[in-house]
Amino acid sequence: MNIVQIIPGSGGSFYCGNCLRDSKYVVALREQGHQVIKIPMYLPIFSDERDIKDIPVFYGAVSIYLKQLYPIFRKAPLWVERLLNSGPLLKMAASMAGSTNAKGLEEMTVSMLLGEDGKQKEELERLVDWMAVHCKPDVVHISNALLLGLAHRIKERLNVPIVCSLQDEDVWVDAMKPVFRDQIWKLMSEKSKDVDHFIAVSDFFSNVMQERMKLPAEKIQSLYLGVDPADYEFIPISNKGRNIGYISRMCHENGFDIVVDAFILLKKKAGFDDVKLILTGGSTGADTSYIKGLRKKLVREDLHNQVEIIEDFEETGRKSFFSKVSVISVPVRNGEAFGMYLLESMASGVPVVQPALGAFPEIVKLSGGGIIYETNTPEVLCDALAGLLSDLEILNRLSVTARDGVEISFNIHDHAKEMIEVYTKLLA
Image (cartoon, rainbow, N blue to C red; front, side):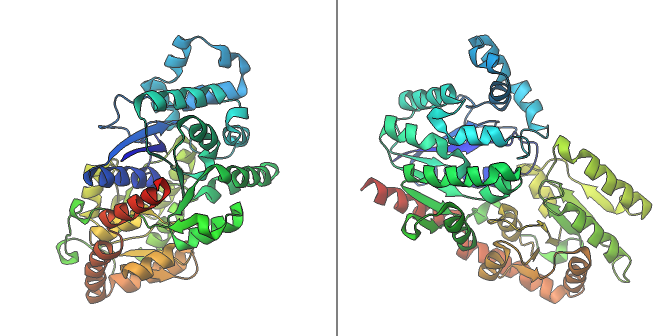
């Protein structure tokens, strides 16, 4: 089967769970003998892509941003287009706030959803032309519903089933100015008719999107994220320090300050002198002053020497991170549709401590690889971490259960087979 996956990239500036999710599915589908092509949009998917060097980045972030604001760029010669979509400029865009934050991109989001009627219609034709010549797919899988403006033209030109994943669209849309929110949700609902099937990453998010996009129940199903347990080394808790980990973009939305404040409170308790805070996940320009403020707080508390930041959050860096931590927490303020870092942590034998928000309770219950706390505050997180780090017997048991839970319930090879079943039914 020939499959095309259209994936918006983060450019490798921070830990992007959605990028990682899509890429892992691609690998698993290929291992089952299918031909899968990843097509990046906006930015490169990761900083070092080994399997898509000959595939252009469509809808280059710099180019479409300038075309949205300044009509003169829509008539720019081809050499200007190539310059705007060059590696150095896209890398610079990835590190800036505007390319990865919803605020300020409301009009562009609307335009993208309008598809052929939007201001990026030339980009859409370029993408479809390239797919028609180079891919000849049996099915096209779109990464999220914010890209639904692509679906009608792809289906019209290529005459293939369209599948769309649903993952954290609400986080992006709800961060926008109120005047645009209703318009965008309405557009997403209208454009859903161009899609044959939707795949939600959790039961929680399936319910959210059925309501927000007015989707019929028979057109959507849950299919969990997955990882290959063989890609992760299990290191017993007894072989490493009682360190707390945080792995995600270091920003306010992801509760980075909650972890830092919980760590400060924990260090004031007796019996935790040996505990360190290990951080990874990167950031963008929008997070600079926020992170600087937290660093100053750690210096004031004389704890900066007990905090380690692992700058490399891609494969090698993540392995180093998981080898050093005994528990992780990413206390996202509004919860998430899933959280890829949960699977990566548990596959490494690292239990998770998460707030009772979004899909976190669903994932932790199914895996048995962590604990859930009710109120997402530094004080409650501190108590949860203190209780777990004080009982090594429970911590070790959760570590083993976490690994087993991923192998049984979140194995990417099992979920890839389920995904192929979806494609096969649509083709039939």
